[in-house]
Amino acid sequence: MTKLRDKIWLWGQTPGSHHASKGYNLPGTNRMTPIEGCEFFNLSNCCRVAMSLGPTPPFDGESEALKGLKQVVWSAIGAGGVHRNEEQYGDLEEVIRQAKIYPNIVGAIMDDFLLSESRRNNFIPEKLERMKSILRHEAGRPLEFWTVYYERELHLSVQEYLDVFDVITFWTWRGENLLALKKNLDSVLAANPGKRLLAGCYMWDYGDGKPLTPELMRLQLDTYREYMHAGKLDGFIICSNCIADVGIKEVELTRAWLDEHGDEEL
Image 1 (cartoon, rainbow, N blue to C red):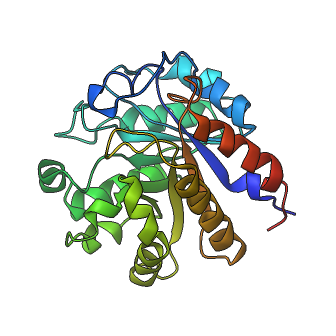
Image 2 (image 1 turned 90 degrees about the vertical axis):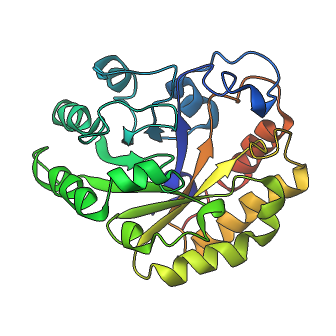
């Protein structure tokens, strides 16, 4: 039987990446790696996503570190500060190469994509369809195509983009907007019937550069649990190892919540 924990992922990024963005106002110093983050939260799935501090291809060392996990999804395009080879397919060729070596790599994700007009103009739906075909046919087994979709993008006319992807991951950038979380999740579900949806789970209010309140952290976690048990959410993604070792109390709240609910059967 599948347990709730089996459907939870870590958003894995190079240590120090979030502190490099000074507007987040994060405390402490981050040294925890993605695999250490998975061990810290007792998770077996990881989205390994490139930021300005790395990694850069080849990804062999990073994939090797994660080879003991159940599932890994690599970024085809990374965070907003990463612009490698965007005139083509970003890091997709490298993701395919890694998937041929490491059987636990199950897909590729587009990060910080829909909010960027230049990225939308470059990665038009027809180009995304070509990338999806590459993922389906060139790794020796079919891989999934994932995207990030923020609550701050709900006003954009991007349905033709979302229609291409196998999996949508929906993220709430500003903590106060978690008060509308159920409404927003229901909106995304209604617009994308039959598509797998995961939620992004921040442990810091990145939009306003301050801590999340414990109340909002619990609201977020409890909502994801409710939607998973109802079969509406396929899981959620904890963000991230980059803040898990800097003394943020919502990190420990999340770990305690996982200890309480992680072994519930779905």
